[in-house]
Image 1 (spheres, rainbow, N blue to C red):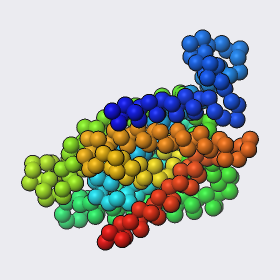
Image 2: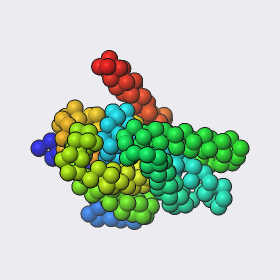
Image 3: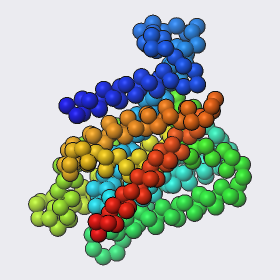
Image 4: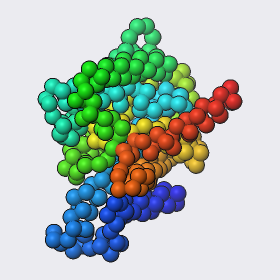
Amino acid sequence: MGLAVLVIFVCAALLSSIMFGIVQIPFHAALNAFWSYDASQEAHIIIRSVRLPRALIAAAVGGSLAVAGCLMQALSRNALAGPELFGVNYGAALAVVIASIALNSTSLTVFSWSALLGAAAAGTAVFLLGSLGRGTLTSVRLVLAGATINLLLTSLTQGILILNEQSLDTMRFWLAGSLTGRDLQLFIQVSPYMLVGLICAFGLSNHMNVIGLGEDAAQGLGQHVFFIKTLCIIAIVLLAGSAVAIAGPIGFIGLAIPHIARSIVGLNYRWIIPYSALIGALLLLIADIGARFVLPDQEIPVGVVTAFFGAPFLIYLAQRRGGAT
């Protein structure tokens, strides 16, 4: 029943995202754009070419980042972990910066594919770095490898942008995390990676419950821990990489949403993952609608809105865990 209620809320947020913006569209006009499309009406064109793709992308990106955060926290057994820790965000950012300079292009399609490749490369580097040396790929080694790669990629990206002012002007809006200007064709190109990542995440939900008991306990119960971790890393890269590829590095969704889901359904990842997907989609849709009304006659990047609400949540979470220890 809880999932059904969330689905209704997500559908309502999708409809609201289509109706509300700088140009207000009545409810009956929004419905007519689907049932009796008329290319001569401005409202129908706005809905089909701008509002509908943007709403679908917001829901998909929010759900993908939230599920990636779930897997990252389960894999590392760290409540403060998120896709950002895995180097995916800045792996994608560095690839986009390099592509924009090398190809002298501002195309969103070029940005998306280069970001997806950069995210995959960053995830692979974290996996290989965490696997080096003696012993198995432990959660601690994975977190340390992710933090190291993330710092390196962040420094390289900022260094390139400082040395190339033209790239800084071009990339500034994308790096803030934005859904503006994304079309349906771009979403169709990236959506298969999101779908495969979600299927992997749902398939791993039972294994995540066992991994949460500890690696020794999981091995004692017959789990192939290394294989499960490998699949989990692939799912994280697919989900977070495709989300960053299409919308830029939107922060705090992957960190905050799993905690909200756990507070509702407990510690069973069979429920945490679907709840996180729906709550992530809902909250990013709401944040995107809010981004249209913060400033009069001007939109701000949705990543700014999520950071504004996510930063206090991170401070609260860190203080609560600090008090618990």
